[in-house]
Length: 310
Image 1 (tube, one colour):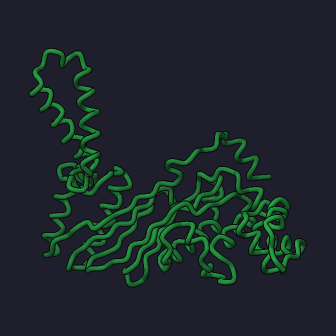
Image 2 (image 1 turned 30 degrees about the vertical axis):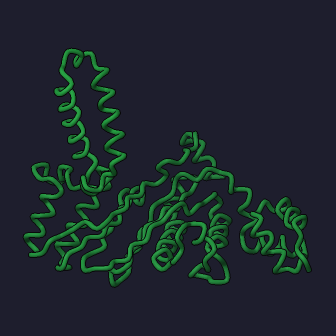
Image 3 (image 1 turned 30 degrees about the horizontal axis):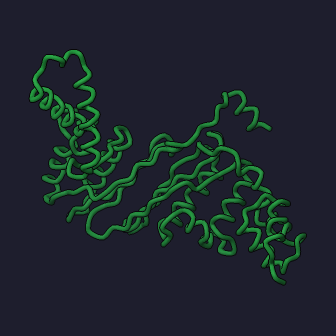
């Protein structure tokens, strides 16, 4: 039977499920509306539709490292409340998502959603997510992920803070894959979690970023009454000094090492490189903080408890 746009629209109105899922259900049931509704309910999609509009800005970040340390994955999965984020069912689900990310070829979340769910391949990742929504009773969302595949000797190292509130995945390159390298990776990942650097080194800072920051610092300096009588060359040197100070704060290897303020991160790396007898390089890192940049619900704690109990 030919599936028309009117049929898809009708099923969408009945269930609140997305157009593509409605069309797929109608195709699978040969246009039988009742069976299509039943199929969507079985997949957990219809049950979760009414929850899809709720703000999911809590949750956790999960990390997976393969046993051979060649592949790593980091993923943020959001929930509506912190209660659910602490739920073991939810945490197990996030761990399963992170493990699948480590094997995915998807370039983004939309493509990832269309993959078969590794734990039950009869469903897609999106359908499996909807089933979790139906089980847990809150809107959930796989927000973002990143996958690292090691192409040289070294170590992939992870660090998770606050039960998944902040997580860091880092890749180090070194000919000596010793335990000292793992400890170094953990310590630098902790540094990244705490200090949230924007770049690894000054060489990584884009020219347009420096140009914009220079403009801002110039505007600040010229509008400060204290600098009214200072020559332009003095103001230029002041701006240069402030920019250098800012770059030390936002570039990882220039930051004071959190465990020993007498060292920079680079000097700490150099000291470990001397111990292991081989140069060490930070290839890349990613830091996720749950809910960063997302709209937060304006709810008080008592309301949240009441909703959870209900």
